[in-house]
Image 1 (tube, helix red, strand yellow):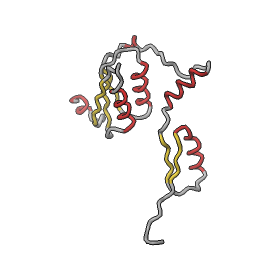
Image 2: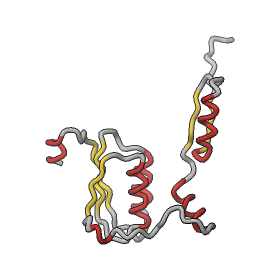
Image 3: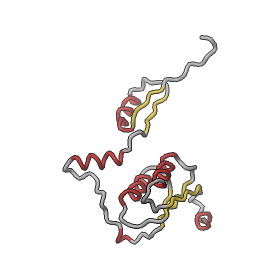
Image 4: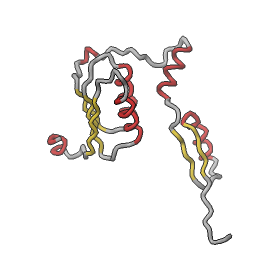
Length: 145
């Protein structure tokens, strides 16, 4: 060895192979890094699979207009289920939404930034995203925002 560090082995899985990645971790034979890439839009995949079969997996026509949620929506967090809800609101909502305000303790994550950028470039877009990094545990800060 010529005074060079060897790179640790990296194994990549697609997000539709998540179960395989977990099973590989459980074998406890890998020393290195295991990466799960979010390269497949799983929500769109679920909707396309639903169209191809008669089974109802998810509805794309929930009527939320009677909920009277208004034109401005305030959410906390930017990953997990809230991200999927925001994707659904952008794509399928039957109400007019002017602003989605996102409060998050952590800096802007790429998944939300991608949603914001792709929505911004849609010709029929009326939704403005407002991302604010703030600690929502501090009610005074949230009130001032």
